[in-house]
Image (tube, rainbow, N blue to C red; front, side, top):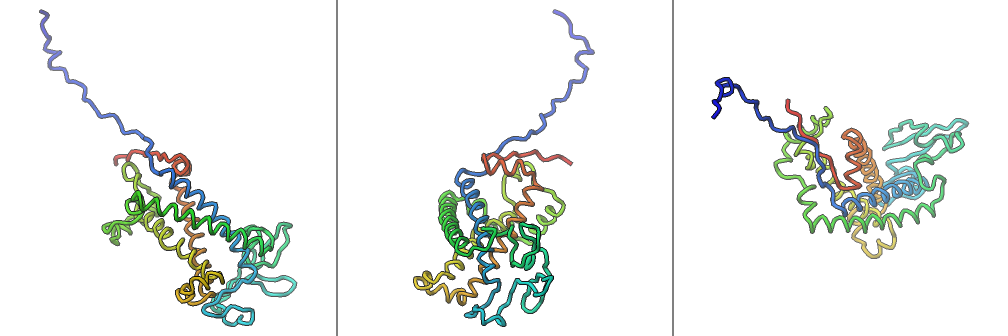
Length: 293
């Protein structure tokens, strides 16, 4: 038998190193969540456009029982323009006037010329003043939002999606945890590895706020403005303090939804639009490994 050389026994063996972690696809969004997300996106797009067109018919907001043209001194918000050869657009909130020429009150029309209109034509549907068409589309997509929202809510309650993924846990609501998450976002440091599979606290607060507060709020304030619903559910008038107060709350909530949408789109771009949009189309989210520091 051949003898084993001492050099073979004493020679150091190469260390076995674990293979580096790799990115992989994780099933993040269920089919129902994806479908209702895109239906909501379409409904909100039309609701905002038609809502701005409707607002242009009477660009003032009131509290309580006021709201007629004779109650101009009672309005708390007005979007309009000064008269003269060169009108200036403005937004007036409780007596404070802000110049908004070029965006609100006075903006360039399709022909490139300035036009006196509260919300610009590019932001409204239809792009021209048509109250009847705007109201018809607004009511249609309002019911799309309601029915789609009920489907999403029912699915979320039955499967536990609302409780498991959206509602924050008590430990997550600590000021230290929230401030840490804010600091991470300010530095554009987004979760990696296993942490990327879950919603962080700012996402949970934002999504839960929209699902539980803003969407129900805009639906019920919208119903309060309907005379037919006032006859059926008169308690809505008491809940919101009158039809004009409901209109004011409706406008405020709509702007909060617009703000949420803009921030949401910004976060999608910053976090990686391809991965984020793909996950909401196919359901697959790419999880990247954490880089050791």
